[in-house]
Length: 389
Figure 1 (cartoon, rainbow, N blue to C red):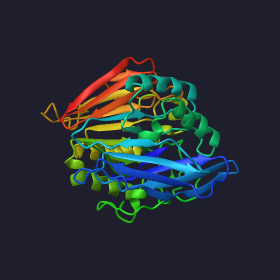
Figure 2: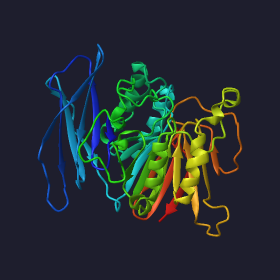
Figure 3: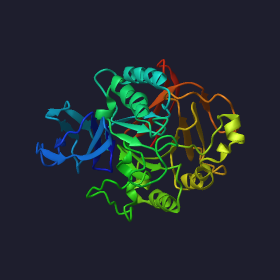
Figure 4: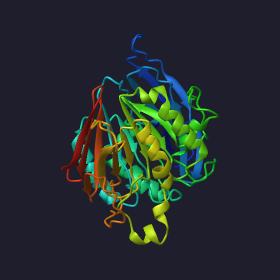
């Protein structure tokens, strides 16, 4: 599985059932603008981690990729190689297609049905350029069977996008032990924890290596995306958010997106858990602190999961604004397979569309438009809108 790891790097993780000494990753670039094709092969020794006696994990980092339009790679273990996989790298003038999903945890049967619809949407000969997973990919981070049955196997059977479409991963409450330290039980999504280091990832806006936490910023085509961790709010994350929102890279982007697992405005949940177990207070910082910053700094779209259904609301950033185009859109996409939330616990009077079923979203951006298309597992359109630059 390949994850984005900063603007010019990718993190690849694979596994064998017995130790494989000398495992490595081979990668190369082509179509480098201004310098012709570069077929220089790079061989990276894999980092090894024993998960248990029958799960042996390897990881390696690709990059920097510079201005290459394609990255090719294959991993090698036990004298055998995976097929050759290629990652397409789009610039902001090209059409970039992003698959947006969340909350497939504990629902592999429904997730497979959603993936069948996703395959039909993209076609047999095409893949999304990236995957934005807005959290809760599995039920229990410590159960290897959950990783296999709820994420890896469905993805493999549902098109194998995880090999060619880098995943931008947003942490959910089920995805990880909340301790941000090595050995925390998170054996598959630790690429942001600082366990791995990579030369060239220290952007000017990032200090003291804080990029290697879950909160970070990346670009997909003409869109700039800030990823936030709703599970572990901190003063450091708040400082990071304000800094990134005001950065030239974010403010000059054609489309400005924030992705965070817990939405600022939740309307559906278990009433008992919401009221009696205090789960209404989860993610309060997102609504009470962060949302004011989203509106103040011209965020176009806030994408969340957590609530297991679909909602989308487009509202004025400033209710007193006279400019009808001065809007912000909130979208909840928590319907990739988990048990649905059907009971209303709040009414914020802000959502234009509510769909209480499983679904996925295709997000497309180019230099002129952001196009959002939500479909259910039967392939029918449940919502769509455009933001024009």
